[in-house]
Image (cartoon, rainbow, N blue to C red; front, side):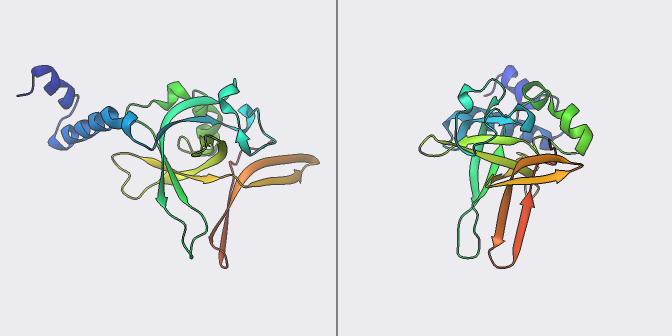
Length: 194
């Protein structure tokens, strides 16, 4: 029989049974987080805080003074096939994660200027199975069945956009994603330049 303390923790500030079930789900997610194979340390930053801007692969974010280490889950949502060229990756944070504490610059520098939702527009360095870090771009929030545990779509940065505007040169890492090689190309970038 559960103790009063466990009941209070489960109930939290819930006013209905649905909220109690959500609190229980959050507790289970938190308790099992570290044992999940998809749980890892990623490094988040924007272009202004990128101290390895010229390279895209074999990054060393653990040596950086500007990239922010965060606990996250990175998992594949879809796999390579003959009709799709890219592996679909998603990024998820713990239910207790507070981005305003972890990434304090986001609201002022991104959300207010672009109307984006955290962490859209941020770069993340993620290690592969050989522990080599690669650059990814958070391009959107995954909205299908994402009410309980929100996740975000990330794409590998594989293209450096360069252009001239008002006699100034600009460049930014982006992702050239082919959904079907022969019919559609989507270009994603952060929207923040210079």
